Length: 260
Image 1 (spheres, helix red, strand yellow):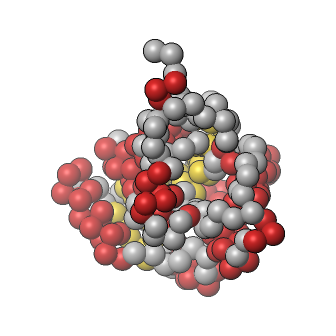
Image 2 (spheres, helix red, strand yellow; image 1 turned 60 degrees about the horizontal axis):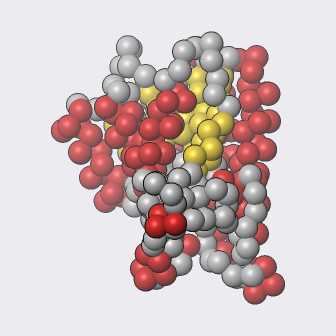
């Protein structure tokens, strides 16, 4: 794979990660895809191979498990170690209760996934980029919840504020190695996000998107691709994007109320 770039995308089995995989495959990248659902990973691997001729390495593990992350990244073959782009997409929200009533187990899952998982894999991939001395690009998928809090969002917001801070700090430390560090911070997008937050309650998840047109996973993937495809001298530090109906993390107008 001497002339083709490699992107590693975490959380590639659904939503934004899956859409990023398709976007980067369309643009000639070879892909390392990670996720917990082996059947979905291999189905995506087959799809991209058939449609775009993409060479893909599917790694099935839970990003919350440090030992599993280390095992899979540290045993990459030399050709797959040549990672040009790392997209830290794996993340989730669980529960939507007031702070004093929240489930602490939900907190643990969000902290372990959204912060520690991002740290584990970034800590291993960054030295590979440095060793190659060819630059590189890390894109962290944050959230508008990392810019402002909202009712009952407490720990999820805190994890995304952490992603925002880590993005800024990583950019400073990796600057001398010509490694770009960016973030994309979406508002409401109709993916599996709400299904996971409401723990499979499809009725509650569906109601989140009623009355307005939410973003799609493809919208976010387009933004990620835009960030990565800029000229070498340019680093887009952050993109915040929302549906037209969303002015802030918790200020909305229904589509019917927006003046056309």
